[in-house]
Length: 319
Image (cartoon, rainbow, N blue to C red):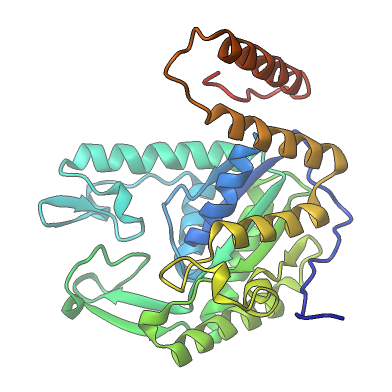
């Protein structure tokens, strides 16, 4: 008997190898997945613009990274004694203009260089809604808690969505390796502040626009992450206390599904062992000279060395 509608991710012909590089951009769910890549010691870069949600802003970020186009003073505004880029997450805000620009432009350098060597790009869209900053008549990625009266809110049109996705794919294919694989997902995090009906409309527009666009490209694919949480894990025990964000159990389940479809066997074994090592590294003691703890650390270091010999890139740099 079956007690739920299980959603599978279609097995990929091309697999993620142990030395592949993965670039991810988009919503907070993209960051959750990227954290697991990092724990698994897979080379990855996530969100050089910080967490951003809509296809228009993500396309703008990808174009800036592609062109290696720096920001300058004219691109910033000031609010609450901080210098702000409306294209970026609030984590880039500082009280000094040179610090804000340094944080922004250093990430552009890092993102541009990483993209040129990237094998996989994962893009996670969160919403079709977008805000326009009225004083500058500029569509923004983040409102930075500036009063609502300075913004107008609307849904991106289907043309704006498909144009943004199409241009994003072109820029990625131009800067990345020839056989780069682009994976599109829609965040399962519901934007309840928009309203439940409005959230569903927003997500539906994203899914439609992705499918209408990627059919034109051989190396672009849709991953049913949204569908897994909405249909497969249709139970609030898979959510955090806010009843909106998936909890660690749900994220690990989705990551396992993704791995089964996209990881080479060697990559899966490598990541699983690194997860176990990370868990062991969390073990602390008040007596580091205790013979049992010394033996435990020696065996753990041996496991780390075995893992290091499997790859060319640095892993477990703090151990």
